[in-house]
Structure formats: C-alpha cells, structure tokens
Image 1 (tube, rainbow, N blue to C red):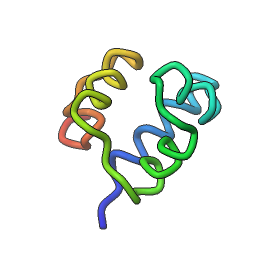
Image 2: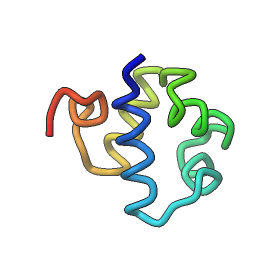
Image 3: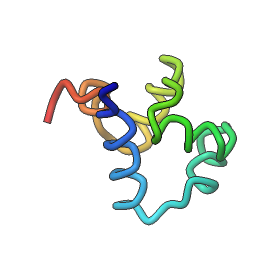
Image 4: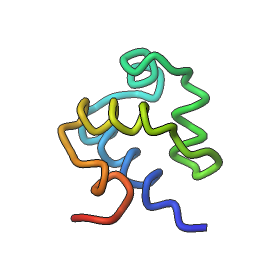
Length: 68
C-alpha cells in the first residue's frame, strides 16, 4: 500500500515542530487518529483533509501525493 499521505503528513508535522498530540488537539481529533493516518492504517475524511490543508497551507493534491 502506498502511504504518500502519511509520509507527507508526518513530514509537515515534524517540519512545524508539532507532536502528534498537539496536531490532534488543533484539529479536534485524537492522537491515535494522527498515528493511524501517518502509518497508512486509516484515511482521513474529506473534512479533515481540508483542515490539514488549511492548517499547513498546502493543497489537498499535495497531501495526497498528486502534486509536489
């Protein structure tokens, strides 16, 4: 399974010096959900993708690995 999303999310999170718990609090999800996303075990809902894209100021295409 390709986990481009999880890798990009983790990269953005670490570049912004955020722990999983801190990002989870800012998005209103649990730390476990962030871990599942980063490890490719679950995919976020569209509403959460939008929140992530806005928070990190990137496109949804970038998060999904469709754009650089």
